[in-house]
Length: 358
Image (cartoon, rainbow, N blue to C red; front, side, top):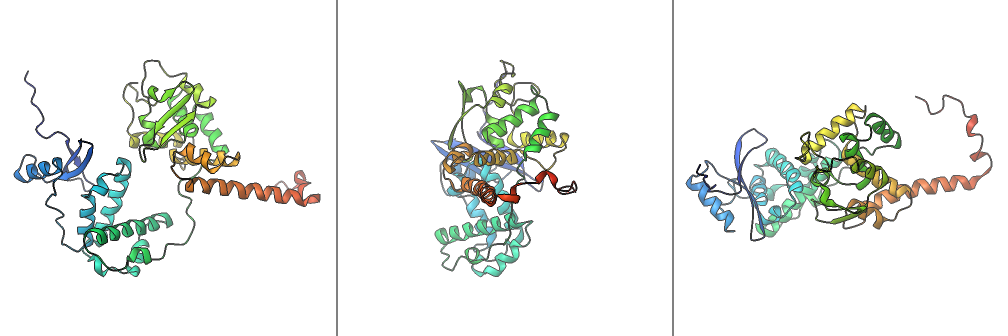
């Protein structure tokens, strides 16, 4: 049987958030990563022209939105080298957020946007973190406009006020929740292995989904973060070692589907783990919450910011500082109260039985 060669390597058909089919080109040519959408239908003159331009690194026809609008700016950035060089996991979320901006204020001219407009848009997002992230995305768009499209005004997003309030993000697992999960999913099960892998390595979904036996080197586990490329080299703690020892020798992915051959995608692994959490009566818990729990217990054990950053796979210690600061405050409060002596540290057993009960 004759096998026909694909005339457009790297092109796949994907559905956008509206359910419409689009042609996406993803390839690496001479070390240059290409990730862009092509006009259809496949094989048409416009398709071939855009495909050749992307492969050869030429400037494509550019955005279709009206010049000077927010939509134009979003489309220009999504087709830029700066966006193409982002990690795949970063692109997914960023494209979704930029699409929301384009749908919301795409027709507005970016020269006419003021800080009050940005603040009003931030209030439409759900929560403190989402609103402030929108401010950051808009600020980056205006920086792009200043660099490439002659925007000389003040950055309205940078001048806008951030939303005040504390956002804790993903729920951090408690010690009690850890024990509940372990009691529900026994050792030797896939849910238990996934749990110990997340907790013992601090890996994200995409990193855990890619791990195979090749990541195990003696009594250590090595991988590179998919998001940043930062290397992570960790000792395998006993709880994780016990689960890894029970894996079939023929299984290469550490977390494999039921066939034992294929691994999970980051999205499917996240969905599976959510289901396992729900089965344990912990629907509010997640894989990312275990990553935070791992960092928290290191901080409470007295680890330094550099040690926690190494565990998380961060190049800087800024994120790790949040965990150590919280742990230090708790420790200082405990030490401070202990200095009071006398009755402050006694008679705890004599407290009324209803104290602390809901």
